Image (cartoon, rainbow, N blue to C red; front, side, top):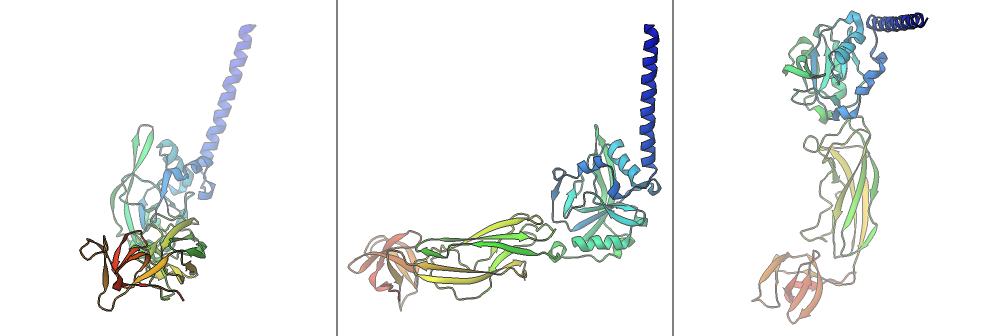
Length: 385
């Protein structure tokens, strides 16, 4: 009786397993014989669309790789072969040719590049057969990313253990017919339609001298493009009002006329960056009022102008100014004597703190903390109005 029971249990398990296998194979066969659009790709593929697998680049080159596969079998079979049979963990392209059109793949993100070992530079990658490439679709990609060069090569999958490595062989500038008909952008990323917004400008409206003032500006990249670092396209803040700035400074201050570079690193799409520039310290009381704007290269970005207005009040000190009708500078000496060592020089018109006077000599302190003695005939006390 026990043997009879064991026989039926074993038969039941075998039949159940066979049925499950048949159902799975049927589903697989159906998926491999159905033309599936990119949007209907199986969920496991989405796991590769992860920022950990790639990096942000300001792309401006495009690579078109001829990879022959049976279009009648559909994209499902091709992706299954690439991912599960060959064991490639990252799909190495952003666009794929299906039929006579170029379709965006699931990892299509602005300036997003999925790495291919063996490539000399980051590129936007299109995979398909050159005979069926849709030129209009390719041109739309060129226009979107402002592509400056198109390359071709051969995609090769190389097994390494259980995983696959994607290699590109014979990489060269494309000379095929469809490349000749594309209208490229020689300036690449410089010609992209960038847009920015000045989100916030912060600074104290009034300070007591001597003190430095830091102006903080928050800027948002409104586009879906990566702004490359300054060595590719400089993004800068510049003074545009051309108002006369009072001569309040010594040689160590940062003038409001400076050009401040914003993109020391990449600026990602829809992200906000913060930059700072400093003015002062001053000694003479005055109000500075200037207007600034954001520039990409030499082009001013529309709607990015902002004004800065800061009042510098005199502190509790006696103010002097270097003065002469005969000389352009004054020697600052270590002691109150012409025989004393010259420590440094000050230009006529520079402001200093008047510390004390001993006969024909005045002890002074500069805005950056240096001290010394100036001959009395080369300095005047500044009296504010």
